[in-house]
Structure formats: C-alpha cells, structure tokens
Length: 359
Image (cartoon, rainbow, N blue to C red; front, side, top):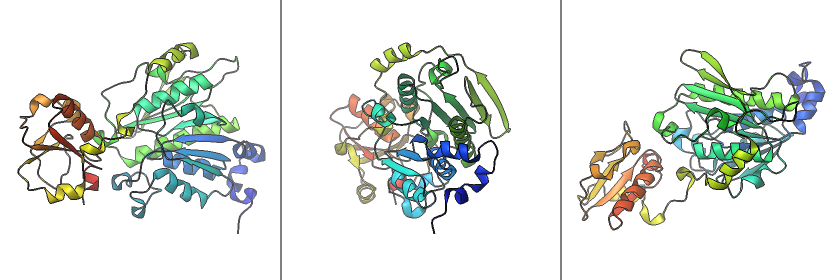
C-alpha cells in the first residue's frame, strides 16, 4: 500500500517550523547530488526521505568492496555495479514521492552547465579537488547555491556557498576559503577515513539543504564549519566574498578541471588480475607498489609512495616488464604514466582495479 504524503512525513510536518507549507517547499525542490560515495549516498537517501521532489544522482564510479565500511547503503552483492544506479534503486523503494534521475559519467567542464539546468541546489559529495572547484565555479557563474562537504582523516568541513543575500549579492564561495587548488592533499584511499566522520558530515550537508529549501534556521553562509571527530570540537572560519563572478569567469575559461582519477585509462597499459596471477612467478616481471602500508597478496620488488614517485629511484631494466599496483588502480595508473613518459619504450602495466580486484 502506498502511503500518503501526510503519513510518510508526519513526524516532519508536525514540526511547527516546517508544517505542510515547508513540506510543500521540499516537494517542489530539485537537488543535484554529485558523487554517490561516502558523502553523496547518505545525502541522497536523507534528502529523498525528507520529501525532496526531484534528485539527480551523478557518479561515474562502480562499487568497490573497500567502499562498504562507510557507504552503508550498498551491499556485498552490489560490488562492481554502478553506484548511481544502485543508489537510485535503494531510494525508489523508500521515497515514492521523489523523482530520480541518474547520470553514470564523471562531471566535466563539458557537461556541468547541462547538469545545472532546472536545479535549485547543488550538493558536493565528491572526494575530487578538481571536481569540487569545477562545481564551485560553475555554481557561481550560474548563480546556484552549493552545499559543500569534504573530509580529511578525522576532520570534516561543511559550508553553504554562493547563496543570494537580501541585498542581491552572493555569499562567499569555495575560492574565498581556499583560493587555489591544493596539489598535495591525499584522497581517502591514501589517507584513510573513519566511517563515523563521513556520516556526520553527510547529515550536516543534508541539514544545510533542508534549511535552504524551507527557509528555517541559519545556513552556514559566509563561514566554513570545521569539525574534529576525535576531540568532538568544532570551529567556524569566517569568510569574506572576494572572488566575484567576473574573477571566476576568467578562471573558468583557463582551467580544465581534469581529474586523473576520472580520466579514461589507456587499455594498452593494463594487466588484469587474472593475467598477473598467471605470471606472478615470472622473473621478467617487476612489481612496484605506489602506496605505503598497502596490504598485498603478493611480494613486490619495490615500494615508492605516489607523492614522492621518482623514476630515478627505479633501477630500470628494459628487458623487464614493470607492473604498478595500488588499492584501486588509480594512483598506480599515474605512476604508469610517469614511467612511460620517461621511458616510452619500456613495458609498463597498471594492475586494473588495483589490489581490490585481485582475488
């Protein structure tokens, strides 16, 4: 039996600050959720469960077994399937009044404006710095509010950027907090993450979206909330709106916002788990791990951290085949590119899907 809206959202409508008027605002709202991983998946589920009328899910990735400890709306049977599609199916069983749309591709400079069409609010659920800046800059240019979230180990960051204010100006954006994209910040694969902080930041982002839609409460506007889960401490960093639309338009014209993790890998530079297993004892194969503390099912000949990857540290033998490995095959592909650039004729292969796929 399909419930009525009043039945499904009774506890929410009971709040005098929300009521039927606020619930109607949620039903008429449209939200773009970019990234369906640790942040994006709970964000989408909670927004749909709150009664947001339209949600567009965007993610190019598939579910990996290493995702499951924090991406709790996926199961073991879902490993290998597209995240956005699995998440869409999960939500459909719980939110009959939410219309869902799915895009199984990476966000890029070419498609970002199309994705922003007919959308009220954008939510950043990604772990990619280039994508975060792309979302920010595009939202500034198209005058869309962006609910930002990011993680680093035990710290989480939340803000609501680019909100139209009473005087007609727009609030601070990501570049007002961090003007330039950092190049040395590791992602969660490299730095690790605890699932609790992921859930905390995701629900904080949901809270921001609900406040924006209903008009209840005070969004994190012109400030960045920084939360530390080990000490249960938080602080708010005040932001001034300095990067105007004109400044960001110039940046947008120059930057590519390309993320190597989302790029298509050269199929000629790949070795499958099956092929590596069959040749694991081959003396002509040299295996190099590009992440420290990587739990490996086989011995490697050398370990060089991707952030300090220097081909000069490798005693190259042109008669050998070099296989680069990491957890998911992303950082190892970067290493493959670096080594191939230095030695174009050297046979260098990337373990497709990384150690996660080696079974």
